[in-house]
View: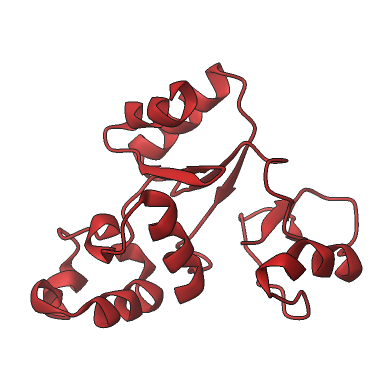
Length: 165
């Protein structure tokens, strides 16, 4: 997963390759993540250097509540605006593993109109993952990742499971 850099600094392909090599990845095709401000793609950070990653929608009150909880605890976080740059299937597979499941339904917003429009109630795992990549509005939020663990923070206080556990 790529993280944001505020203004300053440059994309370091060599460092990114070093970060991704243990995972079998390459840094030759970074995916930009827009925050509506001035930002660039940064090399993926080494595990443990960023305490939290939050799949974030600034319009969501639960996301803002999680942001407040993390801020109160002094936890640095990268906020991934997944509606602007959808995660890849590989990103979703990694996220599901950190959630401790292989069932994409754990991260699906069933109340979204597109869920019914696509007939996802009876969809296969493969079809669900395809739908999540194509329609990121279907991804539940906020999802908080710390290290090799993650929670769907609904209610927002579920983030405390990662901080206190």
